[in-house]
Each structure stands twice: as C-alpha cells, then as structure tokens.
Amino acid sequence: MSIRFRNFQPADTDGLLALWDQARNSGFEPVYSLAEVLASCNQDHAIIAFDGDQIIGAAVGRVAHEQGWVVLLVVSTDHQGQGIGGRLLGELEIDMASSGITKVSMLVADDGKSGVLEKVGFSPLKNLKYFEREVSISEQEREILKDLGGRLLARDLWSKIAGMKAEKELLERRLVLPLSDAALAEAFGVEPPRAIVLFGPPGTGKTTFAKAVASRLDWPFVEIFPSRLAGDPAGLAAGLRETFNTVNDLENVVVFIDEVEEIASKRKGDPPSPTQGVTNELLKLIPNFREKPGRLLVCATNYIRALDDAFLRHGRFDYVIPIGLPDDEARRSIWSRYIPAAALDAIDIAALVQRTAGFSPADIEYAARKASQRALEQSVFESNVVTKESSTTATHHYLWAIDNTRRTVSDEVIAEFEQDIEAIGRL
Image 1 (cartoon, rainbow, N blue to C red):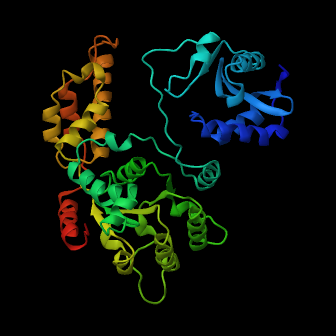
Image 2: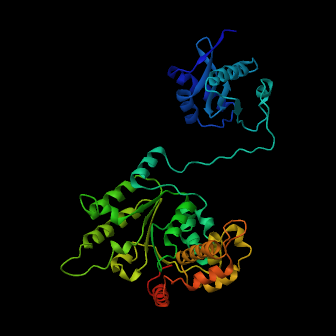
Image 3: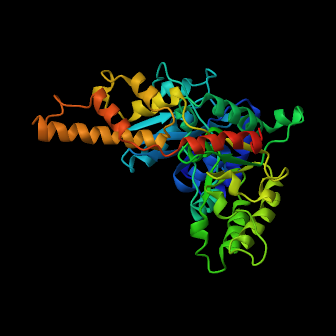
C-alpha cells in the first residue's frame, strides 16, 4: 500500500472534515465534538494517514498529566480492516510519549465496534460509566464575570440550606421552576420572573438564599456593591449604569444588590437628597434589565419600609418575599455545623434549638464560638487538661453562651416584620 503517516498540518483541515462527515454518515458516534477535535489537532497531538493525496484516517490525542487521551480515531470506510487504525494509534502514542505519558486511554461509544482497540493492546475496563455536563458559561463570559467580580457558584448551595422549608418551597416554585424551564412556563402562560426583593430582619440569610438560587439555576452570580461604585469618577449613578450595561453581555445571570435601601430609599422633596439621582437611575435600569430573558435581579433589604414607593410597584418587581428567622430544623443544622465532631453525639442539641428560638444564624454562630472559647479556657486554666483527646465542649458550655448572647433581632423587629409581610409582601 502507498499509505503514509505524518503529523497534522493546518492544510489538512478540509480533508479531516470530509473524513469526519463520511464517518458520521456511516454511523460513527464520536465522543468528543468536532470543535474539540480541531482544537486538539492545532494545539495537542494529531497523526494523519494518507493514501496518495487523500486523507484516509486520523488519530487525535491530548495529554493530561501522565495520561494520554485519544480524542478521535477514524478510518475511511474504503480502508477499514487494513490495520490502519492500529498503526495510527501506534504513531500517536509515539508522538505523545515525548510528554511523559505512562498510559493511553480512550472513550468510545458502546456500539460493539471497539475490536481494533483490543487487537492493539487496549483493555476494556469493567463497571465504569462516562459522565459529562456542559459548562454553563463561555470563555468570553468568564472575562466579563472577572471584570464584574462575579463567579459561578458551587452547585450544592441549595441543598446545604437546612430547614426553612416554606421559604425554599416558595423560591423553588416562583423562581427556579419557571426560570429553569422557560418552555414549560410559556406553555402554561407563565412569565418567568425578572426581579424580586427579599426582605427580613438582619442576619436571616437573604444573601445565602440569593446565592442558592443562582446555584440551583447554575447561572453566574454578580453582586453589585454600591459602596464600590461610589468610587467611580463619573459618580455612583454612572457606575451603576455601566455595570448593568456590562451585565447585558451575559446570556444568563443573577444580579444581587444587598442593602438596596442605600440607593433606593424614599425620595423627598426639595432640596433633593444625594441619593435621589441614584434612585432615579436604578428605576430606569430595572425595566431595561427585565426586557432580556435569562436574568434575575435580586435585591435584599433589612428595612423594607425605607424603600421608595415607586421602587416596589408592580412591573418592576415580580415578588416581594419575606425571609424570616431560622426554624427548628434550620437551627439544628446550624448548631451541628459549629459543634466539634468529637462532641456532637454528647450534646443535647434539642435543648439548644429550643433555647435559641428568635436567634439569627449569625447569633447562633457567635454563641457556638463563645462556648468553644469558654470550654478551651476552662480546660487550660481550671482543669489543666490540654489534650484534645480528653477535653471538648459540653452542653452546659452552649447553654451558658446562649444566656450570654444578645439577640440581633428584637421582639419589636419581629413584630414589625410580621406586619410588613401582610402590608408589603407580594408572593
């Protein structure tokens, strides 16, 4: 045969594409996309087989640490059964060997056509499954996020919120469901929400819920800090406008503004307050933000009564959702997070949960750390026990810390919050 092999060159691209199309038309099921194959051809390792001037086969690979991965192995239908596939793999292995590989691996479709691999020494591994997921943002969007200080969050934040079942169910139904499946929402005539307000006493987890929604949707999370925008040479209003313009370049995004009352407080008459221009700008930006699908604005406030009346009106915000203090299950989870593992089984967590009704998550964290510090000091200075094997926290340490922790949210604030749910909440 007049078969020859050499490294891929850019001029081979058209021939490789023709070979790809021929293989696909004959039932070939590639594991990697054409874009990934071409990228590896130009950046990693690729061997091309020729019969005269015609490309009749290709083997493409990439190296990860000490392992070589075969991205593509394809031979034209007219030349199959002639040992060309095995020869391509051999040439590719030699080419990748210079990178210090100790193993060559390949993923193939489960169609029973992997005989050539076994003939050249590849062994199928049992009890393995191939998993994949799409990356939700492009490289260009990563650069935009970097400029905005945004990021993709871990996908498990939603499941880490223990308790708070009423709040989670409400957000799941009102936000996550219509936003994650816009086609289903449209079929029922539901317009996916574009903007919401979360309100509640300080420290109740509004920021946590905003991040959890972004995590649940697998959308980038961008937090806008008015205090940082205030340093913009053109002023806070211009900085806010520029940020929203940049956000528009993202396909999907959750934008979060905490303590939004700082830039959307009630406007008064003459003379205008310093923030009135910022409030006006934000009121203009929200309708524009709502025009494009795949985005959600989440504003949070501890003082819902301080917000401008025009800010909360229908058409700007779809829902105004209360986020209250943690329920029994949530408090149990928070306590379990801060109690040392070695002491957890011996602690009466039920007593701690009962004694901390009305505590915010931040209050519980403070009390837990206070208890640990007291236990440490007693071990060192009173009991002279300084080894971790024989000393740890006990229930009485936590009960003492609870008694010596001032609640962040007073009964008066809780009463006002319940009034605001009736007067301002929109579910």
